[in-house]
Image 1 (cartoon, one colour):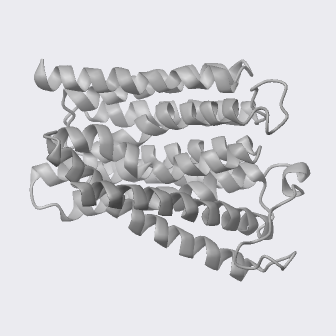
Image 2 (cartoon, one colour; image 1 turned 90 degrees about the horizontal axis):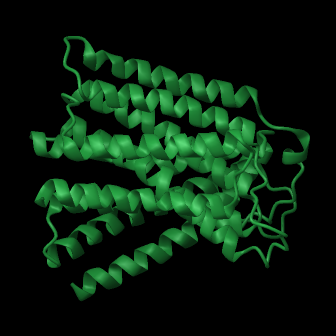
Image 3 (cartoon, one colour; image 1 turned 180 degrees about the horizontal axis):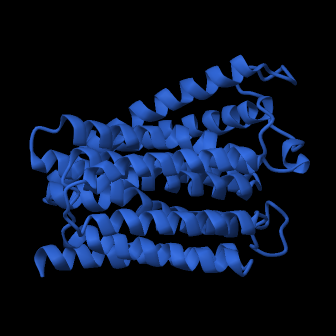
Length: 335
């Protein structure tokens, strides 16, 4: 177990350092493609960091040999949005609160495009409720609705690319590209190479991180099912959360929240679409609880963005909803 703990901590450090390279690279990719900060976060960064989790779901539901293995993929598809909508947003609030003095902010109010993020939360909530509702129903052509979820994500990307942001976003000062620290204007090729290399390291370290988490859970006597449902999603969403930490500490919460919002949209469409196509997509009590808690969290976020009342202090309490989910799962399994 000691080896697992050490490897677990080493992987966490590697993921954090790789995320620094990733966010630095993806910012320069967005600059070279003339994309605004919000679009860079919601499309480029979100797609890259959500790719490893989507791959886990793909392997589980497509190549799983039994119902238990396929259920891991279904759990990942539902657990990802839950973690992002609760823990990740709460972490943003905590980091902003801790960085308030460094950033010389008079308060913890977030400088973000609330109207755009409110719209994103609304669309996510509709799609998520649709996919959760399908988990409660059985009818002949249900699996083919997975294609509709893929189309929904394609429409989302098209819409984001049309709203690239404004000139102020594009003109923000960027840190030098870490692969080319002395080049004031690195090419798209160098920025893309750094981004892809960082993403590969993140993917490998994340897989080892999750496996060590499961080993620690087993050594502590925690069932594999509970680890997969409660802890694995937290680990697999670590890149998005760490990206948010890095951007918030730099005073770029616009990118941080855009990254989380975009990753949530991917999680609600691509993994769910794979689950619909390759599994029965039937939900048990813990998955239903996850769907309900996620919907509540998104409704709260939508209200905050709609009222333009988003601050570090208002986001921190949302993390408590994950504790409510954990308590509900433990009660369902052992009550």
